[in-house]
Image (cartoon, rainbow, N blue to C red):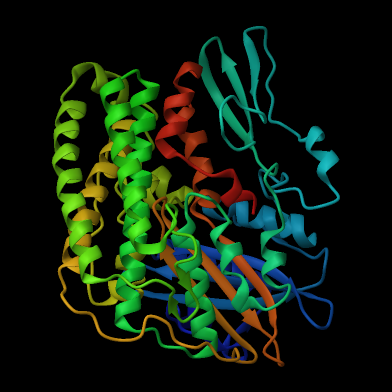
Length: 496
């Protein structure tokens, strides 16, 4: 069955005619078989074919062989197929999304509910069918969609017995903006600012994935100099957001030295990004063909000096944080997600690595400078808040070492920006970048006149919101803020 699937590589465009066309039931069976063999689903989406039918594309990642597998199938709008979500829980959200967009029914799906609520259906959010239970001692608690502070809109519904949480259901869709349709409108080469705005804390991750897609489609080869600058910016973003997460965890448990120190270090990292891009968030740096700002030797020396100081303070606060009994008593065994549950749910990034799954696109599906400078994913098996905090520390230390290696490389040659060309006709490409939350995936498809037919984005939060649900089961409702902070997920990345 799986022999009919095509093997492709990350960031390599292929002619669409090479993608094998299967019967939808055969494709779903192939997904089950491959996941049983250790592959992961990373893309599953539909688009309207010229004949009016719905073409469904599936892409899985083989993290051992470092390649992807792909197949497509066609069905009519409103068609039906047997759901595989009961045997492959990682598919449940993908199947729901296909149903929401094109009415293709996954028969037997255990949780066929709205995902994002497209335009024109906003009023239906009030009618969301929450899971319920009866009993005199069972009650529901609602939180959101409007929250205190500067945060995204999303609704949390707790089903509780006293203070104990039986189930947490997360209702998204309030941040839906129609991002994917905006990519297909106008010149796709000019959509870098849109990619940077998918979710504001993953600017570099998403804009790099978009640039890789455009470069693959137009046959542009980026210089090693530009690749190194891109990777430096990505690791800057990873360090800054991991420090932000550690500061937030410290604040939620009342550990003020950690909240202030991690927060200060995060601001220093973001201020240092100004030496690379002129923007604390890295906006305007990466564009198809390379980068718009060079990194001179003097700036590199200045960055190295700044990170020497950051590293010293980072080690001191880590020692204080992870050896404080009061801190550890609040983090250990809190919100644990087992390795098996993480695998079955399809988790990525911090959520996966803290539960013992070595999933990291920089190692599994290498791109850019990571093809030569391979990394070893950091890994823990606790799966609790303590593990998710420590993963941030380990990844931050790893990223600082990568920065030192690249910044000490001496004179870098090559142009920082190559001219882009017309995109290849009738082509398809998948690009995967390891953002700070985890692997994010972009897919692009062109038509016979090189026009962009379809663009698809899957943010790590699309995979990982279910992890918060799993983590809250059996915990007290007062544990929610800390569990939520430890995953630090994005509604805008999920809702698009």
